[in-house]
Image (cartoon, rainbow, N blue to C red; front, side):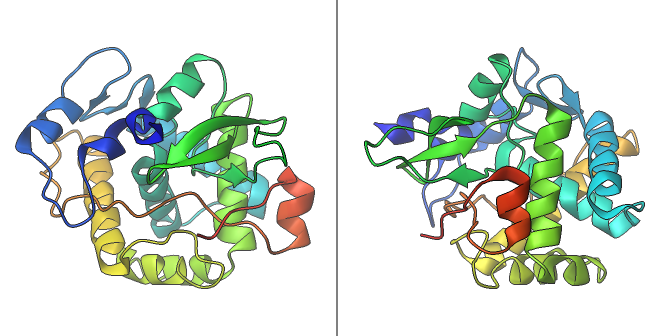
Length: 234
């Protein structure tokens, strides 16, 4: 079944606690695994550099600290910088996705060129794929902050819960519980800060929620011209 290919998402269901062993596995070292320093071959420091470069490319300016931290936290939460679960298999094949960006299936049910089959919350999806982490990050930042306009203003507050709320503005970037998503972003930001400061990350304050993260797409010529992609709101 599709959910068996969803990587770390299959370890929990909405409302169910995550076993302690899950977090132990998540921070265990190993090829392709997540550690306190990053995910697979992408350290938190490298991810920060990629996020900053993406902001310069999309907005023509440097990201503020809040913008960089919260953008990176979302990328970590959504796909583990394209290195967790199903996204790790895509990365191993040289195909990258940082924000769970999707495209609709073709009439025959297959995935269109420039996308790869996967799943989101147990449902089959076609995820956009890019030739490099940098290209994937630019597409993610463009959709999140240029096409999904309320997010940048929310990032200025520095509050992950405000960002989670802005991401719910139609068409919603995710379909799960807003309060849990905001708390999860705070946990991811805390993990990133700890790693960049050279200290061990604290345990996440909340368990993840099965929030159906495949993202929007349907508004704005900018998104269409930039990636020719639609995000699905379920």
